[in-house]
Amino acid sequence: MTADFLAVRGIRKSFGPVEVLHGVDLDLAAGTITALLGENGAGKSTFVRILAGDHRPDEGTISVDGKASSFHGVGDARQAGIRLIAQEIADAPTLTVAENIVLGTWPTKRGLLDPRAMNRMARDALDLLGADLPLTAKVANLRLGERQIIEIARATIGASKCIIFDEATAALSDAEARKLFQLIRRLAKRGVAVLYITHRLDEVFALADRVCVLRDGRVSLDRPTTQVDPEQVIEAMVGRAIAHSRHSVPASSPSARAILEAERLGSDAFSDISFSLRPGEILGMYGKVGSGVQELSASLVGASSFDRGALLLDGKPVRFRNPAEAIDASIGHLPADRATEGLLRTMTLAENLSAPSWSRLSRCGMLRAERLSAAYSRWHRELRIKAEPTGTQTITELSGGNQQKVLLGRWLEAGSRILVLAEPTRGVDVGARQEIYRVLADLASKGHAIIIATSDYEDINAVASRALVLVRGQLIAEIPHDRISTETLTEAAGGGVHA
Image (cartoon, rainbow, N blue to C red; front, side, top):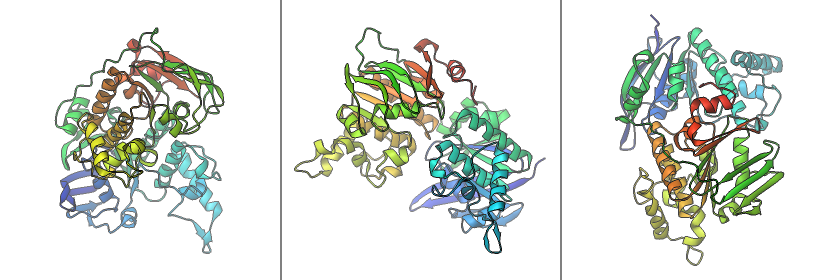
């Protein structure tokens, strides 16, 4: 029987008058992998930040190796052997790979940084992960997935006894995700207690020994994964059973006039891409990190560029120099990185939703609160946004799924005919995913033309009329509506961690 490294009892935490955690208990045994799930707003982030020393609980106890512990900061938690790998990248872009990996544990010799020791530590950490990154490369020049690997490598340095992974595969390719799973299993075999936070049920059953679910700040399920099935986990998360039905969004008739066409588009990230998009359909673009899917979608809205081929809008050639020109052409865009590229973080829901329409809603150059509020209220009920109907809350107060609905409302208020959505359900829980799928299917039924550019096959399975599969910048397959499945997608993409 494995011993508990970490024993948490009766953890409570409030922010102002709102209690977020209502007495959470959790045991993390050395050498085991525990998956932590819950809808956005269930209290996961608050709970793990208490474990990592970033927050202090109002009540409750934390025992490490059988001894009562009190963390007054992140340093105390790290001293106890607990490391959190947060979903948001927290690296130093101007430093090298090696320097980033040893951040916080600089090796010194006679009071000065020891470059040889630093490179040895960094290389050992990367070797453990099975990654091969140039130690002298500036982190700012790396892909998001490579930067995630550096975050993970940093956490393995030193006497880490408990590592918390928060949505660790969100930015990784299939190959990188496979290596991560192998690393996590090796860490567990070495006696590390792993807490793995994810929204993906397939990852839970592929990786975890135990699953713990938080709902409304309480533990609603805590059992070995061999004793539960996905439906039980979902019900524990949302408090009810959810039907995972495929929304019926059939492809438009080939004789219907295309609203957007690509003719042999090419750039450094993709080449020779042709497709057409018609009103009332949802075109899925599927591919993992490095496939060119995100670069292709960005080039359609002027956020990136193509240097070969042609893009036609209503049969006429167009080339958007920036997203503002695409907006003027009635094309709305959800970027993959919602937090940094989509949200106006200090502004209200009404201000965020109406942002592209400010010029239309202003009077004599001045924005009027009642007009912004009226714009928000038009979509609050339609999109089932779980927030105050006034739109006066700051957008960062909402869960990821509701933030995404506000950003969708932004383009509906602007009257966009075409929607280009990059990773529309990244970081979104099971219940909110189904709501977003419902919204997209409804929009397609009303004649909107939608592109989903995603590395998540669930998005394609749920709503795509047909799917384009890209691998290393090449269009490998076009899968019709009646053949879309996890198997056909992963087979076309060359297999994957979830295949």
